Image (tube, rainbow, N blue to C red; front, side):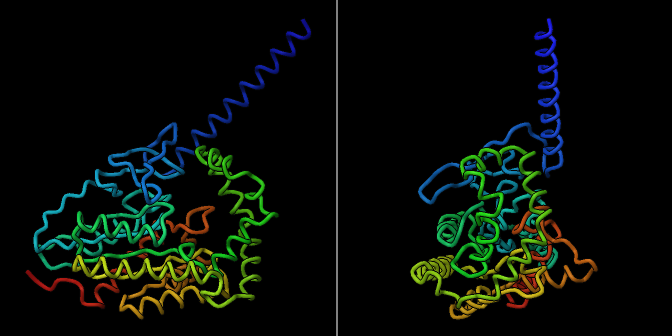
Length: 350
């Protein structure tokens, strides 16, 4: 009888713990943007370039709601009229262009579409195709332009680079700070992290851990950044390949008769540190200018907005070092519009 009583209490305790964990998982999922779903489903199909969005996919993955149309673009079905009064834009990039962690209307391509439409002559229409895919880099950007430009037939192509797309010291410092042996992330095997990341509760705990250690990590990054190396010395062969991808983008844009510009997203540390390394920004700017491509570095714009308030305004997702929040994406959209307008790329009449 005594053993039975103990087992009963253990069973009740176990059920209570399971119920609490399930409730916490549901609460974490409710807090994430987009429609509620009980489970995560992969939105990707494996192909030659690694992975693409599964056409007509709808579901949640890694804290983001994926609404993918038939061409693999994020957003509503791409149905251009191809009329002369239609201004079509192809946005290419990684998760920062896709808009990881925010609702589809809040990603920068969709916000840019609204701003662009307001700046076109009467009777003109703006359409922006969001070709961003999580995990992509310059090699895939060139392939996306080659494949989607024939569908989108863009007047403008905007490529959103991230600092982890090419060898540079800022990327190396970030990886050292957040993936070193002293970091909790390094103690969890990659395959296990990948499985756990399908749980909203794990994503919330991961963000909380980062938030708690944010100032410590910033201090470490600032200390390491004082020992920077010149851009390109980290991996000359890889750097040469990156320039080849950039040249391919230029060629593809010319073949489509489209204007091309490049923007570079900042890491959160660059926005909030007093001092940060500019070598990667300077290098990419130089490469773009040598090819006649307008270049947009978003660091200055983010720093200006952040320090417009005291304490500085948060412009990145909670517990995320790379992805802007909706206001941050709005800054990107406005900056791209300013450059397009300054370049004289907007139509002037019927």
